[in-house]
Amino acid sequence: MTGFSDRVERISISGIREVFEAAGEDAINLGLGQPDFAAPEHARQAAADAIVAGKADAYTENKGMGPLREAIAAKHERDQGIDLSPDDVIATAGGSEALHIAMEAHVDPGDEVIFPDPGFVAYDALTKLAGGDPVPVPLRDDLTIDPAAIEEAITDDTAAFVVNSPGNPTGAVSSEEDVREFARIADEHDVLCISDEVYERIVFEGEHYSPIEYAETDNVVVVNSASKLFSMTGWRLGWVYGSSRRIERMLRVHQYVQACASAPAQYAAEAALTGPAELVDEMTRSFRERRDLLLDGLDEIGIECPTPKGAFYAMPKVPEGFVDACIERGVIVVPGEAFGSHGRGYARISYATNTEELEEALDRMGAAYEDVR
Image (cartoon, rainbow, N blue to C red; front, side, top):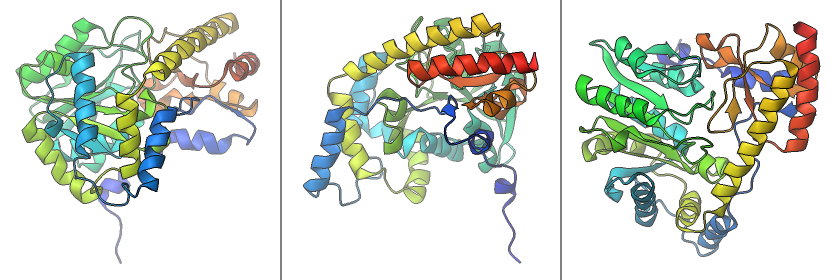
């Protein structure tokens, strides 16, 4: 009788999903990593026009449509000063597929992959699906990852390390000094740095920096997405870029698991990248206001929380039983251990929801805190 692969038996359903299923239908959802803004009108219209005109009926190039990849390359040249060829970009089914093909193209069974803990849930799972061994690294007190901790964890079996700034689930933003160190480590140790930059534009304090800006070798690949940048999570359009030889290997995986990203989504993303950018600035301003509202509310409750400098997540320190008490009172927050063992004692709160719900959620969280303190 056919069983199941060891790879799939090493992973399980996300702990985030378990929290959702435990809550009532009318609960305030502070667990979902999705902006509450509509995608840009010109992006939606571009997809609709392409569908009506019959332009979205056929496969595109495996890497994605040329004009889309040109728009992606222009965006990164504009924002990071990178001389990026459109040929060195693959449009993917969201940032999730981009991470997946990066892992599959570079990780052999038994290879080690270093990543932040707490960190995005996919890093551990995708490492295991590629046959690799996860090496989670705890964070500093401010929830940034220390380059020295990454360097100390490197062994002869290390294939890659993952960095994520701004970070999920922490909202932490790495300094330029740290990002330079990530590039140096990739260069000097000849290991791949996978830089997950899907929250790139949502920065409240400081600036976003990418390791690919400073690397002297081709040991950096970058994952990005329209999902958080343009509030287009449902469109499933991301991308990965790097050197030609790395893109060629990732393309080998992509062409068999996906063939090409959705054509309507490609038209929408091209329009979003080349059209007005007011939505991006509006979202960032709004998320900063919501962050401040949340931090003030948590402080009044008596809950300590490192200040997130980007994305739309906060990760406060919480007492045992707090998450369950919140769920009982109709507020979904995610236990920190869902993002790694070092997340125990924390909870992730997404403030990608309106201020009225945030204020009500804070009232309920205050009551939940009193229940368990």
